[in-house]
Image 1 (cartoon, rainbow, N blue to C red):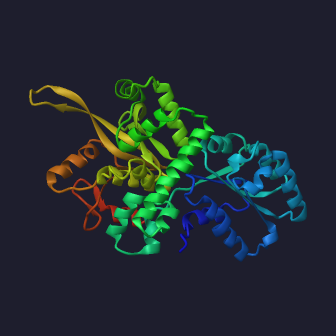
Image 2: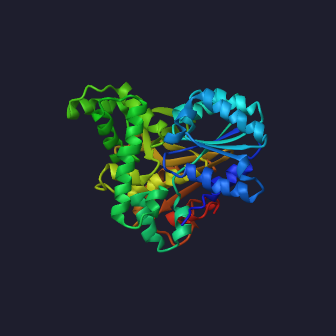
Image 3: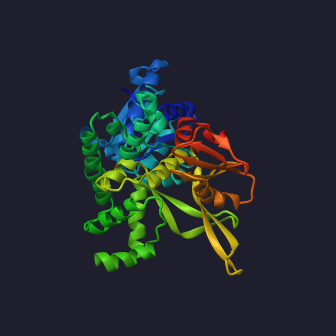
Length: 416
């Protein structure tokens, strides 16, 4: 079985010969290498390129260690271009190549067509913008979406969604047959790949605080997190002297590894971002559940995490909305309250306000869910996503309600 990753293949095809270095970034083991060196390579061969024109290099392989030296690789690449000026480079894990920015700039000067993958945001996203002299093009890849997974298995969608909520969308995990195999792979990836990468790359010798922080963040997806309050908790409960600055730094390491992503709070009526607290979501729920030994699988927060990841996959900028309102109390006085909108999704001139509600058993619960949406006061579309809904339906307020399946399985679902 092969996951086609058509969404990303189409991006690579569309960006051919645009004069940029195309860098596929994302969580390790999410399928970047397979996309580039199997799916895209197959496409190139089927569309006229010869094997000699395709230059592959995986910098994380032991046999290629010497090519991590920028001078060695640059001479190797120049030699390939002299033999075949129309060569295409498919390069894997480029953060291991020393001084890769100047190497790629040099090759771009020789009209090289370069595609690459990388697994660390700190060394990649900022450099793509600043170091490639405006000639870097990032394609951010996520683990499998539910639609990608369901397209291949196409079985009981509720059971498949439950498994997706539990085990996530890493291709290696999705292809494992037995639950115990999925759990084993996730546990191994977390400790032997992600955690080790983070501690080694950032030279963290005392890992207890980092691991405790991971447990807290994993337990609190979809909840507001404040580094200052975490510092106090560490001091009182863990007897640790870790500071809020170190906590913030550790969280940045987790983001750089694409393990977590921060969602900032946005004052909808004030049109301003709020500094703290913020929320964090896992790039893959299977890894989150593995971290917690599968002991804390709550459908409410898990579905919220899945919606966030789907919106990011669709290239929306996603914030946590806050709506400030003055409400009359029973005493007749007014007080200011902060209502939350789960997601404010923006792309260009488009904006959507989205509430995630796993279950809406009655009208009282529905009124609770749409309360913040009704207070916004602008004309952008407002949506409630729930685990069960018969069909996408607008209510008298113009609020659209749809099921999680309608949302995830239709790439244009926000346009219902």
